[in-house]
Amino acid sequence: MKYGVFLPNGSNGYVLSEALKPYLPTYEHQRKITIEAEKQGLSFALPMIKFRGFGGATGYWDHCLEPFTLIGALAAETQKLTFVPTVALLALHPVYTARLVSTLANISKGRIGLNIVTGWNQAEYSQMGLWPGKGYYESRYEYAEEYLAILNDLWSTGRCSRKSIYWDLKDCQCFPLPQYKIPIFSAGQSPAGIDFCEKHVDQRFVFGQPHMLRKLEIEHNKRKKKTYGTYLLFHMIVSDTDTKAKAIGEEIISKADKVAIANQISSASLDTSIGGTSEAHRLSLDKSLEDGNAAFNTIPVIYGSPKTVASKIEEIGGQTGADGFMFSWNNFEEGIRVFGQEILPRISKRN
Ligand SMILES: Cc1cc2nc3c(=O)[nH]c(=O)nc-3n(C[C@H](O)[C@H](O)[C@H](O)COP(=O)(O)O)c2cc1C
Image: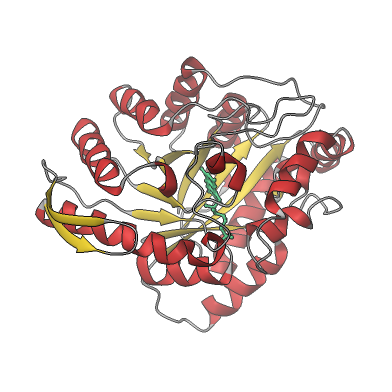
């Protein structure tokens, strides 16, 4: 079982609530978190990308450190951790991304993957004149397929000749070749996003809400052979007792940053497709901790005493056949320390 950290490189990490002190992302903070993650035996760290935040009393995600430059520095400070920077496809030409990743593969000696994000928030891209138009909600995973085909050509041969409605590459060159396989990650949750993951990625992220866990459990019991791994995404709250941990989570919901959440939901509502992340945002206001409340950015919360959280992880991992978990925390450094010292040792060795 592999464990990772969802780096808080956007302001306030993954909590939209006045219950916690707002913070801006800094390199020093990311560095401390990453070093603690490596020390406590985590396997990977994933920074996200946002070009426009959601404001509100907490200034949610109004600041965001750029993931590729961040990883260039963090890779030099670590020895074991794998990094999965996020690329927002609309914002970076695929040839530039291929070169960024092969440079990072060189710096990190192969400790690098790539998280593919098609983009669900029009305002981020239209402010730069990069939003292709309304049809993009339907075509974005075709765009992703073509983008990935270019990356794969360049990473395998250093050359690419491909003409599509998006790009026209004629004997385009990109060296050095990465000397390591680059695992592709994606987190699409909509039917088209899931289809993309099933065909093209090495690892997919799934939000760990109860209905998704049941779906994974059914698939796991059918023992259908998969070409990709599954990582579950949770926010973790640990306290001395289950009751105290739940109370911390509920206080965060009760003091939710309603303006930032309303802004996020209004952006998400432009994508009217069923079953994806946008729909989850639209429905997230009244959800429970377990179901992915808006105050936690729709990420379900795993909470309790160290013993409870360890047994929940063990049970969920066993039932779903997941390959790993990625977590966010209220206080990342402390959360990772508690995870490494009090939770990991309780999780049975067979995981
Ligand atoms: C672990 C994880 C990381 C993500 N990182 C980003 C990101 O950096 N930027 C972004 O705009 N969306 C990000 N997303 C959102 C998804 O990549 C995807 O765009 C979203 O789920 C919409 O696709 P869907 O409608 O197919 O679900 C992330 C989601 C997850 C679960």
